[in-house]
Amino acid sequence: MTIETELEQILDIRGVNKAFGGLQAVRDVSLTVQRGEIFGIAGPNGSGKSTLFNLITGIPYGPTSGEVHFLGNRIDRWPAHRIARAGLCRTFQKDAEFPELSARETVLISAVYCGVEQRQLRERSDKLLDDLKFAAERRDMKTSELSVYEKKQLMIASALISKPHVLMLDEPASGLTKPEIKALDELLLSINRTGVTILLIEHVLSLLLSLSQRLLVLNHGAIIAAGDPQDVVKQDVVIEAYLGGRSN
Amino acid sequence: MNRLSIFILPAVLIVLLAVPLFVEDSYIRHLFIVAFMYAVLASNWDLSLGYTGLFNFGHMTFFGVGVYTAAIAAKTLGVDPWLAIPLSGVTAALSALLIAAPVARLKGIYVVLVTFAFSQLVLQLILSQSQITGGGEGMVRLPYLRLGDYSFIRDYKLGYYYVALGMLTLSTLFLTALVSSPFGKSLKAVRDNEDYARARGISITRQRIAVLVLSAIFTGVAGGFYAIYLRVASPEALGFGTMSLTLSMVLIGGVGTIWGPVIAALILIFATEAFAGIRGMEEARFIIIAVAMILVLRLAPGGVLALLNRLTNSTLGR
Image (cartoon, rainbow over all chains, first blue to last red; front, side, top):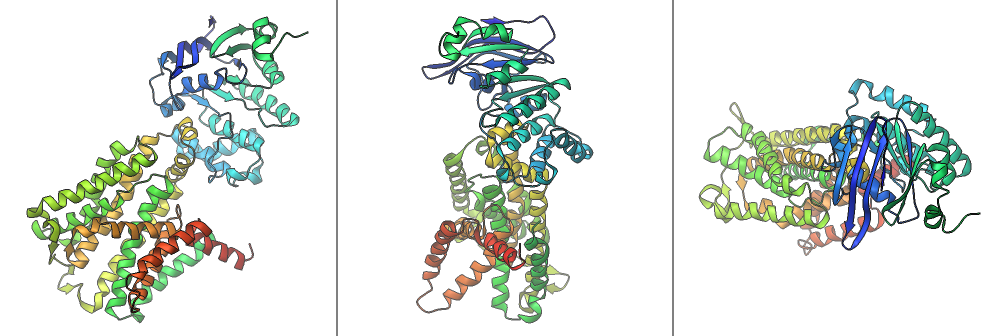
């Protein structure tokens, strides 16, 4: 199944597959993402959402077959660091961190290796952390000492410092409280308004529906529905697979 | 830099500079020289092992390459020992580049196996090429350091003491600058979370190659100095005893600290020599090092430096 658009494509995934021995984790998935949109990806646990992110970014593996095109370049054989430097940055489902580095250092090294000019480093990282409302007094603390929300903020900040074209967020709301989810909602909207395209995997359906302009649902590694989020969630196949039964 | 680095360590350097004024005994000075050399070896090993988490068991190969480079250059080719010593750093870095290519893409136990196999390969090469290296007997009576008419053997090793201290100071400054730079921070990032590091544009392969080469430079220089100072190049330099003693310095001093292995080298060289002087304890000293290593790993995994930091922080009321 394919989800298509006629607007400017930034990311084009063509029939990607991933097999682990006999297990087909992702099955013939094709989709295109247009510049500037927020594209949601949903599905029950184990449906292949994070694996799809892995295949696109090459972390830790690429697809068994199929193609990934980004800004007109075929990237599915590129090393992962090159994909990131090209402007396709992701976050991780679990709180990824560099425990011995401070928040400021985490952002700085991301900037250095994604080609931000040396003289702009400190100014730009401070401004970004300001924009993300990251507490100034906690920027020099070791990452391992930060709260879950701060770690999520930091993961996003370290991706944004390189001014990526596409930001891929893997369940950013997991482990957050309701007020924190509301703050995250506002944060992601403000990032998107700056022109950053967002691919969003999320289990918190309210967040996904409020943010996404288009939604794709995976089950057993294959696309079962795609399109307008409000329409998609009403489809029987989605209700059965994702919500676990027929809604009222 | 923490308080220990800012205040105490420069003071230690001043004390070390003054040591020869008070210590005229040639043997004590020799122990200092050997300790300085081991400190260079251990702190540079810490760069790859501690900072990058690369289980590189071929580090002593870089030392051995340095030893034989200086020996062959100075004795066989007639190169001035002052040039032969830095040349050892160059050849050690080149040998690191050679091993880095296959190692950079490996993980965990495979890194141990390949680097260990590489060290055995170099050892066999040295033993088999006896017409160049002296084989199992090594090379002796190497040229010593001179400055004009002044021989460094004179004055109870005074000259060698300051050359060794200078080498340790340069190496430690180099390592400290390196680990404080964005490159150094990225090494910790690679060690702690490879996937996240890749996702932020860091090439794991390139970082590993760079770190192996950088950690080999002063290790090779130390090897060159060792050969010129002792006037001997022997396969012992690549032996298990030298490797295990250096590794114990890294672990007891504190992995991922640079300064820790430097401090541990000074402590262990003098402690082992102290035990060697006690009747019946000549061989027991190695058992004591092993026990110390187990105790540190079990009770204070941060090593001696972490303990010192804790002590200074509590004394200064932090």
